[in-house]
Length: 412
Image 1: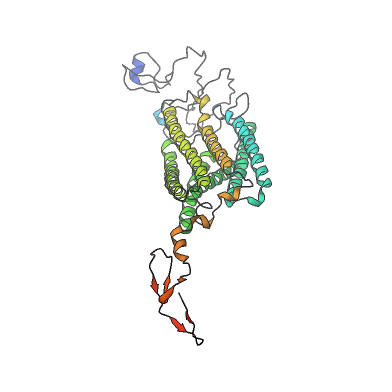
Image 2: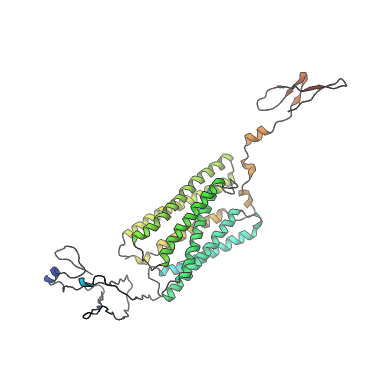
């Protein structure tokens, strides 16, 4: 509805001399056409500079909105002498349910439901944990930490949106802690999945020289993610340009990909070790874990493709009512994967059977070579041994007893 062009040329927002000659508009004014669908729209308000005044005031107005839709406000000047014009002031937007923008409003209820879901998961997990606390593995303590962080994150996001909806101003303190707890939870979850894939506590008692690399990757991922989330959530809504956001998104995406590649490489090695040792109980649980991760990655890739399609085909935010589904999906996916992990590694009376046992990984060849049975005595000073090479050996260390009885003193 805004702008026009002469003879189908480049579109102009302000009326040019060529357009004025055609009688389409008044030179120096904003070009707009009244909407046939919404009578009275778009609305135009004018502020004029009188004489040599350097300040012009646009009177305060309240505009009632009676129809749901995407509304935009533009500040336009068509006078070349106003180059460098600065605008000060504020606009207040309110929906029938509160101050939350329409595309963000559904997230308030979503975070409420997610908080409830984490509470249910936490009750189940802590009940299992207390019932079998004597058999708890270090890995299960890590899962307890992730569930606790998840409950705090979802609760803080719900209160942040509720406060924003009530006052119209984002509570920066709550937002900061919601972002921080969420980033810690995400980093901890990534690291836990990685060390589980490496077989920590199941195939190996330690990570050895890889510990520093895991800590370095996790720390870098935390800093990159925390920076991106703080900039996105503590600033004004949608105040970042696309290029500025990409500058912060790329490091997070690269580090996330590094985690995924390292996880699957480690998982393949761990499953190979379990197959070689025929540890069927541990192998079964790792196969289920691998299937869950593969499904999670495939769903993530598919959703990224849909997200790109959604945003590239909705330049003017016409599908704003469904935009909340994009961020909500990632929370649901991570929660689903956490539920699978909780199911596979739930504390029980038999938890210790999944713990690392050195005897399971003791080399059977080395075991046999260290156990040599005592040689059996035979005539003529020969000793027979049942060692793997099945060769007779001559005993050269013999002694003669003073009582006349010959006895061989065999030494090994």
